[in-house]
Image 1 (cartoon, rainbow, N blue to C red):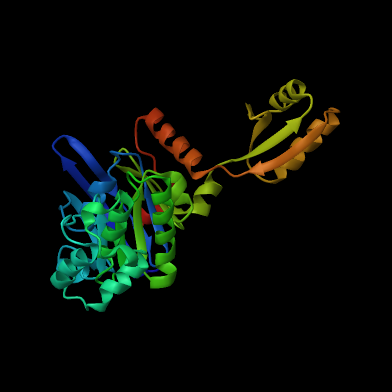
Image 2: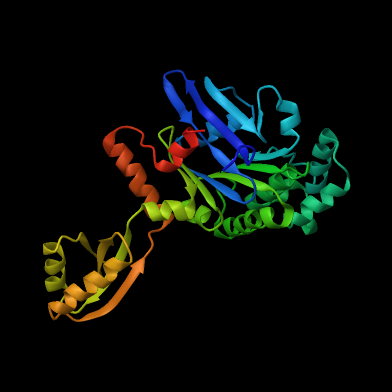
Length: 321
């Protein structure tokens, strides 16, 4: 990518709290348009990184650039182009949803009509006249998102927006976030530990673990870095497993089938031919792509086992800038 194509760019971003290293040499590259999923377990450094992106805390080292400009010298101008929902939204429970939006609109100096636009966007128009104390957690989160949209942001930063929501609330929030880039032209930077949810909406992924960035790139790039698996169904499973292991394949039993580590689609033909040559009856043969959750667990377990951070080529590309 050429310079100027990133809405968020960090260079060597680091932050300590006493002896605790919360973020270590973070190099983010967030392209314009779409959803960028910033993934990691609780305590990995996601919220600290987001607070530095918003200028709420200063890094001990490194730089944040938004829209191609350094944050430290252009904070007010840049923040006027950013909307954010960090942790639970700050709401006045004794006011209605619309009144909460009106308070923020006046502070921002936004046009009054943006209140209706924001309410319609988050599907809260019908409940806008109710007091916030009567809202469910999911409705409060959606109202918080409406507050973040009042300045018509080009960049929307969301920190764990589905935290604490029930399945229905998670589904509503996921559907809403998925629509934002296409319908409103906003780029979404989304932090979460719910990998299966992010997998359904994000085009780009950054994975942070123990304060370090392990991977950065598209979801398809992440998946291609990991070995695919071949699900094999054979009537003589014991003989088939022995045959494959002797031939050098890594094999596990899973859900009544044999799961074979495969490096390429051509491996399916090789395995099928090998089993047929041994007169073993194959009734099922399918390549399966590992889920984001499986890949994440593999990445983080490898780092924990090695006792240090590990950079992929995705991060190396980011560092080269």
